[in-house]
Amino acid sequence: MSDDVLDSAIILAAGLGERMRPLTTHTPKPLLYCGGKRLIEWHLEALARAGFSRVIINISHLAEQFEPALGDGSRWGLSILYSHEGAIPLETGGGIWHALPLLQREQFLVVNGDVFCDVDFANWRASPAGLARLLLVDNPPQHPAGDFHLDQFGQVFAEGSPKLTYSGIGTYRSALWDDWQTQIATDEASLATPPRFKLAPLLRRAMRMEGAEGIRHEGRWHDIGTPERLYSLDAEIQTPRR
Image 1 (cartoon, one colour):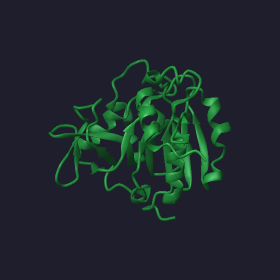
Image 2 (tube, helix red, strand yellow):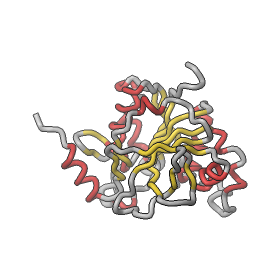
Image 3 (cartoon, helix red, strand yellow):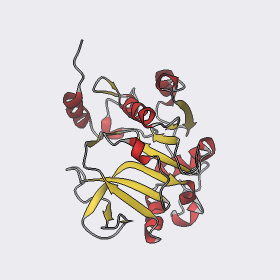
């Protein structure tokens, strides 16, 4: 496998799903059903179709449910490994950093486990030119201010307008986490073992160095953040009963 072709992905599935309660009181959000299958299964199927072979799933909340539900990935032709974070999730930045030794790749795809998107992951197997390549979407009603500005040359910046919303999907180089401590405000979480910190400060550093590129996705994308959004999407894509 060429170093320029990605074969591995991380699915972020460790969140507490607090806004999804009571549905997530006994079930992790990525294992909730929508359209006849678990949310995370939509991602696993799409990754397998695109030619990915290895998937790391980071887990924390109700972590014991994931392996019995998904197994080793062989049913999708994938190899699944689990990155256990303990009782307290490590946030996006800390969760990916914690998974890097298990991943053993210099570049990889990251997918939030609680989004639904029809992006073709086959188009995301190329290594990012810089440190990150982000999939951006039009701002949804629950996030009208957006996150980042995409310029006419495909570069992404923290400042500028208009802003688009980060979809939770992107390709990264592990070098983005080099010297991460200098970008993270020192607090109890960042000094813990393992450390807990967000991804955004690392992305902003990459953007200042013009090391982040972006693609605007005009297809279907949903942030499954509340029970109402889950029910709405389920009604939209529900497979016919046989």
